[in-house]
Amino acid sequence: MVRSNDVLFEDAVIEILSRLPVKSLLRLRCVCKSWCDLVKNPNFISKHLKNVDTRLIVIYMDEDDGTDQFYYPTDLFCLFTDETLEDLSLQDLDLQQPIGGSVSGPYDGIYYIVGLDHRMYLWNLAMGECRRLPKCRATFPHYTRVLCTNVGFGLDPMGNDFKLVLIFTLWNEKRNKSHEFSHCAVYNLLSNSWRDFESFKSIHYSRPHSYSCTYSDGVCYWLWNLHHNQQIIIISFDMGKEVFQEIQGPDIDESAYETLGLYYDSLSLLFLNLIKNCFEIWVMKSTNWSKQLSVGSIPGVNEPLGFWKNGSIFLQSDSQRLLLYDPNTQETRDLGLRSFSFSVYKYKESLIPIKGEDNFFNFFDIPWHVLGVSETDTCPN
Amino acid sequence: MAIMYALKSSDNEIFEVEQKVIEQSETIKKMIEDGAATGEIPLQVSSKTLAKVLEWCKQRQHKTVENENDDNKGKRKKERDEDDDIKEWENKFSDELKADKDVLFDLLLASNYLDLPALLSFLCQLVADMVAGKMPEEIRRMFNIENDFTPEEEKAITAEHGWAFQP
Image (cartoon, rainbow over all chains, first blue to last red; front, side):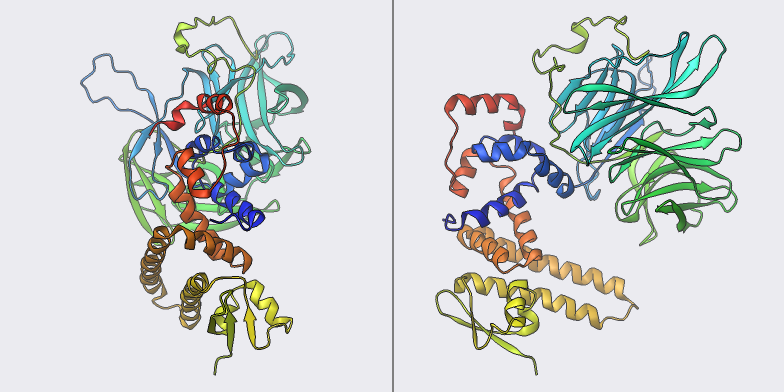
């Protein structure tokens, strides 16, 4: 067979394998040593992330159908199995452990979870791998608690390692107001360790939007507001240089439901223009904003949710349906879900290895609630 | 009158091809530009494989020419029809290759050698789809790869992600 031209063939094999689902690759590691090494290779992991399909994850609240007298609304995590969304089959996602504080992500296929034990976890959904992070021993002033945490995760292209960034907004319990400064901590995946990072003055910001970040080209972005006039501000963090920066938001009319995301790979803002009653997309190119698209009002639809592929956007109708609008064809599709709140996420399977020292889930296959982890095991406050 | 070139396969068969068709290959384009291609162009590709390469190139050529002649009016509808046609053609092309793995792998090597990125990417996806659901032993046979793990090593790796071996 094709053994005549081994070097050429090796390139072709890398091309072929980088197009396979994670499950196949975990199985095909057994083929031979060189394939096994390839799947762990950081360059291959990046290449695979570029080639693999983007799919849709929706988090929504289930509805009371009146049959359960002890009904309590719960968050449902669902993955649309078909990346083209032609077939609307859903797969329930098992988060593996109860969530205490928050879930953020997915970033390159990785979720950040605060568990019931107040500890932080990273979880690679496709590989079924989970890591309990070492405690983040940040030192805060007395009488302080964490009011909210902004989360960022992504590749540091300079160090060729993944980093988790947390921005803690602190509350002074004695004076009953926010601290003037936010505290930051950075976690490196390779070294499995935390570093405290310089604090920055943040008293003039408010954070009415999602605590998650949008990652693009080595930089994390969060959508904040200026406290005094509610003007939109983007806070960016360069993963390589480890520098925060404040970026002016676009100069827009009165708006609602602002969300930050990637529109054709560029950082963009999607919102409802309350004056003109239309949806607008503004794109940022080297800190300058320009209006990219305006979608005239769609009857019965007021809430934009986020960006999808090929310039499409997700919307929620007043009748609580999840819709996908394609500006190219001007068609709106109902994705078959009903809920009073939706969160939409782009998801890519990834090979980023999460398994590490602190991961006892894979060593003992014991359900979480049996472990009896005590609530006193607190972090980071 | 289109400029024609003669390609000579490794088993000495001659293929007469239009310049525009064969210039999709960066390798041949360079040979023509360098003036190395006077008379017959000898290629390290068998006639069977070369015929497949040219089939692909002609189909691609067709598509680009038609797009150039389009005016914008009514383009969307036409584009969609064209996309359907191309998909149908590609499906037929894939089915033939899936049936003959030797030709498929030879074509993969040829697309690399002739520097035809679109064909290379198409074939890699095709092989990836064929490989995705298979077990390691089937893959070793398919790619002619020797298992260089000891049974203990293999068992350890298998155990690490046992669920990946379930259907």
